[in-house]
Image (tube, rainbow, N blue to C red; front, side):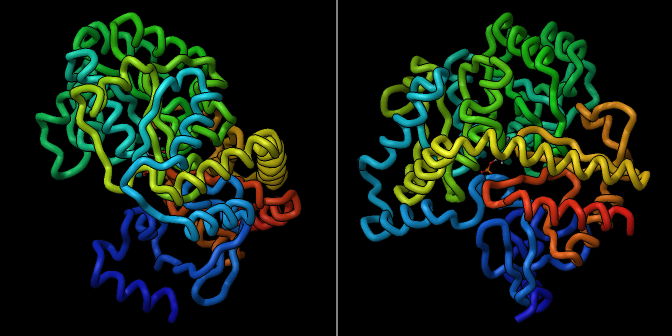
Amino acid sequence: MESKALFERSLKVAPGGVHSPVRAFKSVGGTPIFFKEAQGATLTSVEGKKYIDFCMSFGPLILGHRDPVVQQAVHAMIDTAWGFGACEPYSLELAEWIQARIPWVQKLRFVSSGTEAVMSALRVARAATGREKVLKFDGCYHGHLDSLLVKSGSGLAGEASSDSAGVPESVARTTIVVPLNDIGAFERALEVHGSDLAAIAIEPLPANYGLLEQTPEFLKRVEAGAKRVGALWLIDEVISGFRVGLTGMAGRAGLKPDLVCYGKVMGGGFNVACYGGRADLLDLVAPNGKVYQAGTLSANPVGMKAGLTTLMRAESLNVWETLESRTREFTRQLNAGFEKHDLPWKVDQFASLFWIRERTSSPIRAISDIPAGHKAAYAKLFHELVGRGIYLPPSGYEVGFVSYAHTPEILDQAATQMIEAARKV
Ligand SMILES: *Cc1c(COP(=O)(O)O)cnc(C)c1O
């Protein structure tokens, strides 16, 4: 059956035909492609067409689809057990592996999604400080928990309003939102709200609204601000953790979070995430402390095995270095092609993440820097590339990912097609 027919059936059972909004292609238009199979860097649609995949499940698949070593570990686990709801050694192995390598993770708790991780970390921060408010940055995504599903409101000092129907204004008002890359606005918000803030949360490499790389100075100033006002410093590394390097963006920027969240790469493509940080904070969590948090499928052994095998393999192959140099070369080629043909495109790159957008005269570090026509321009490029067998994320605000399965040959081939596509649109 073809994608179109499957989508029509899907529309009858799920809102918008999907189980997560971006999959519906609303941002780029057209009918979503249904995929039936994936291997390495390749997706196969139900029609049998092959695509080079740069969406990679929105980030988790750092080794590519069905890496053979991870696949074997998952098979072996399934042949042993796939759920206990009781103590088992598999999550212990992954927890110890992380704790031994990441100094700011003194203790951690596994959960099943990034949203759950951030939501729980925030609950800990509120319990630990006895404060209610949380400061976030406009352009950072932290999952779909009520208190962070907010946008900047009309207030001058960062008062937020809800960004989704169903989020009470009373909840939105507990969140303060300030723009990225604007230390003045941040300091003003601290003057007004500093002593009420339980946490200051950030994506240290904002990659859910384009790729909005922050300067190390900005990150350091925010960290200093959090410490000064006694707010906990909550780093959301769900997308950047184990993606930009073993110790994530915190490691690269020299940050020292009180609380940190991981997900995506950490689960090797399965439903695994965690929150961790200072032992005294994690010890506030039940059954040790009074912060309640639980999960029927938390630390599911299949996910634990997939995660640990992915991370061990990433470390032993040093995939981070390889991916970074391949991605740098890939985006260098793209930018050289765009310039050679005088095309209005630019690719931003950080480690193995990239973002294609219209060319601007200065770097894009905040939402307000994104050109107004970006969404429409991206939609055209996206469909031209689909025709050429290249699958980018189906939204101009999502970033692309290079995996270990994207060989230099595949990347060369993709770059040639992408430059040709950009000339065409
Ligand atoms: C993906 C993401 C989340 C949400 O994770 P889910 O597993 O989709 O709930 C939270 N924060 C960041 C930075 C993310 O990239």
